[in-house]
Length: 268
Image 1 (cartoon, helix red, strand yellow):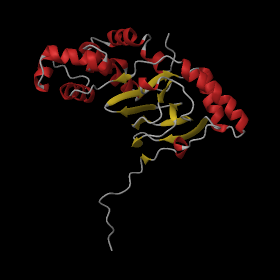
Image 2 (image 1 turned 120 degrees about the vertical axis):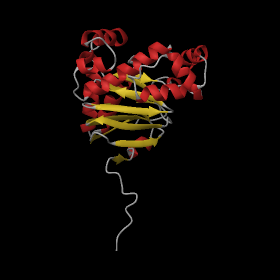
Image 3 (image 1 turned 90 degrees about the vertical axis):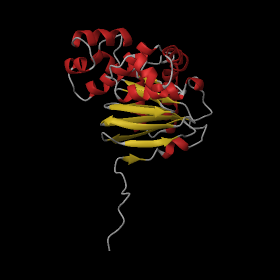
Image 4 (image 1 turned 90 degrees about the horizontal axis):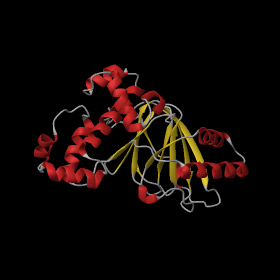
């Protein structure tokens, strides 16, 4: 008899770690790690523990309430406890997580998810915790990790979507196709808003002007393509830059360092 295979299980669909749901102030920081293939996904979920998600290699995409965060290898993403979020692995990743009990304040929860650079110290602590079995040493390493997470400055690797339906029509379209060359008046007309209204919505709901937002969308799209091995020249030309040097200059202006240095967490 033929079995019903209309909805076969997705081999790349993963469940969140049970560690994220443990409430235990006596164990404030717990670790968990696994290797995930490109295309692996964790469907939207939330858990009481805060989470620092880091991949020693690979590129992660985190989404929450329409907003998107890209997490290259030199960075991690802090996800406050109780925040609905989904994870997609864009390029194969060795993921390592720290889960922080809700009794321990770390970063301002009102700020939501934040991508932060993973310092050499934090990286070594994460790796040590993933191999450690002694509870006392885990607790001491966890205290160091909390201090590093709390002190890290957020990186501008978020693409906020906004809330107004007219704004979301534009941000959704440009998020899917960052190279879309259409000017603001055309996009505004399609969204059912005036140019002035759309400009106001961008600043009020994303914290960025339209041009700033579009530039960030293009540069975040470029990060994904760089991580997949595309050349700066081909990316630059497809995004409308005159060449690789113009693209690198725009990247440096927005992120403070050239692409390859930034992606490895060596901004400065």
